[in-house]
Every structure is written in structure tokens, then in C-alpha cells.
Amino acid sequence: MKLCSFEKDGNASYGLVIDSGIVDLGARLPQKSLRAFLAQGDQAQAAALAQGPADFAFDAVTHLPVIPDPDKIICVGLNYHAHIAETGREETVNPVLFARYPGSQIGHDAPLIKPLESDKFDYEGELAVIIGREGRRISEEDALAHVAGYACYNDASVRDWQKHTHQFMPGKTFAGTGGFGPWMVTADEIPDPTRLHLQTRLNGEVVQDTDVSLLVTSIPRLINYCSTILPLLPGDVIVSGTPGGVGARREPPLWMKDGDICEIEISGIGVLRNPIQAERASI
Image (cartoon, rainbow, N blue to C red; front, side, top):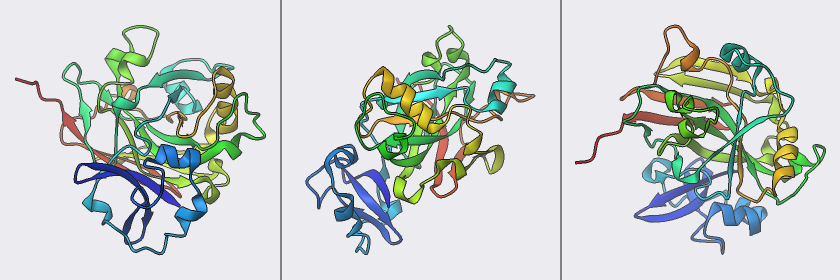
């Protein structure tokens, strides 16, 4: 199944994406958010609605981040060999983790906001792993059983702010910089995420291209490691890392600017598309 979060006429909901549009699950099921559905809902009941009819055309709603209200978003840095090489850093035994806040996220077709404070606005195409079953100290062998599904993510980064200190966070959670969508594909349709292929395009030009099998720290290991720190809850998001080809490491650097279009495509999932909008100073 493909599941998304959206807003229509000022009302937030979530739905099942089918060929003809979106079936509004929030209007039909007791759970009123996708996070609550992952925690308590019956996927078979949702799947039974896949024949439609659709309530809304896909383009007739405002798309929200797949999980608008996760308890936590755990991002992984330096998790592809090519990206480690282009940064000149050394590979670490354990994953490099940092937090992104839910309020920084946007949905499919919403603008990524280049902040007033910087022109060094960079793309990072990534695979998002969405947790479906709570767990603490989850073993690598059991890890994929805790996954609800997968989605595209653009962990857009404000590079000069990222480098203010040794901590990544300042450049990684500016308002309007976390693209998450267009939907999540449930894990039953992606039994082996290492077979996925990720591509980032800026104005139609391919700037990142990789197989997910090239992750340094695997998805099961990430789930094991993160769940050792604190329990993973339904709706939590692990953003698994970006491959080589980021704009900051190109000669000359390639920054996202007002009017650009950035797309993240992952095979078996779909295309997350976001225009770039320069932030306007408030009067």
C-alpha cells in the first residue's frame, strides 16, 4: 500500500493512494493520523478500501510530510562510502547520528525554503525508514519486522550553519528544509530495501545516483543501534544517509536557489518533488 498525509479545506487527514487518487482513511477509520494508524490500525481494513472510490484527486490536496508528527526523526550522516570520500572524513565504527525536528518538515510539492541567512543550500536525497512496531534493543535479525514502510526524503542542508561547530544540527533543521514524501510504501511491498535505487535530480540533472545496498551501516544495524539508545515508536523516522554528489563537494559548488526544482526518486517508491523558494524577509 501507499499511505500519505494531506490537508484538504483546512482539515488534516491521511489516506490510501490508489490509481484514481486518495481514499480518505481519516474519515473512515477510528485513527485520525497516520502515526496513530501505524500504532493501532488494521492494515487489512485499509487495504480493503484499495478498490476505491477515491475521495480526492492526488493533486487536489495539500501534501503534508508522510508522518507530520513523529516522536523522533533520527538522521544518519556519512553513511555511503562515496559521500565519506568526498568529505575527506574517515569511516566510523558506529553511525553518525543527529536529530531533525518535525517542525522542519514539508510535504511533496511544497517549497523547500532557502533561509535568509545563507546561500549555501544543499540537497541530500535519502531513504526514510518508518517504524511501525515499538521496540527497545531490537536485534538486527528482527529489525525489518519493526518497519512499517519506506519513503523518499530530502535532508536539505544549510552548509555554512552546519559547520558552525562540530555538531551538525544547526544546518540540518532550518524551517521548511526537510522534504518527506510523496507517500510511504508499506514494507510488505519492499521486503529487501537493499535492492532499491536512489537518484537525486536538480532541475532535471542527475546529481546523485546510488544503490541502497551501498550503505555503510545497514538498515537493520541502524534500527538496532538507535533502539538501544531509546525505544523506537510507531511513526518514528530514521533518515538513512545521503550518497556522494552533494552540491557542497562539487567544483564549483552547486547550491539550490530560488526557482529550482529538486526531485528524489527511489525505485519501488516514487518521486518526491519540491520547488526551491528563497525566504522573504517579513515586514
